[in-house]
Amino acid sequence: MAISHLLSPLPSLTGNLTRTGRSSSSLPLNPNPHFPKPRLSRERATTLVLRSKGDDSVDASDRLISAVCYFYPFFDGIQYGKFIITQYQPFQILIQPLFPAIKAFKSFPFNGFLIFITLYFVVVRNQNFSRYVRFNTMQAIVLDVLLIFPDLLERSFNPRDGFGLDVVMSLDSTVFLFLLVSLIYGFSACLFGLIPRLPIVADAADRQVL
Image (cartoon, rainbow, N blue to C red; front, side, top):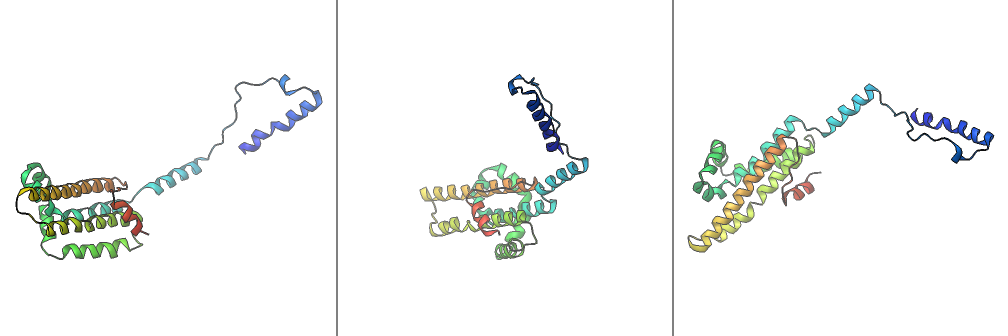
């Protein structure tokens, strides 16, 4: 409708030029022409707004499941904070509310493996869950798998004192801080419906989630 309305004056203008024989430069031009703007009906505009919000939003249940998954690698690697937690009281205060959950997680030696199997086969490989949930779950799993490397290093290089002990303390504290930051970042982002992308971990998780 708007395009046909804009083009409708063209035939009459051409006819006037043919009859009068005037050039286009002699025609008066309006410096501020006003063209009618195309309008959407109220129903159509409402539909577009609702559809755009629905496509970008994440369900509350998906946010909660995704956020909780980031506790798994943190609980599994809490032992790397043994030096920094005992030396700095603010970390003790921060971690204290999680002590019952950590104790339950560590109460059985195969809890970490069982949770790994459950998250991978029940959540990540289950197409009934949204990609948002599967990606965040896989990202938490990959983060936990990476804990194998500092564990192997600590088992093969276990000094009792001196410079070697300082290196181990620095390594453990770095791993713990990375897990803590990943937990806070991943948990907070998921609660707000955002997609947290952890360095190194995110690309590996993307390749695993179809």
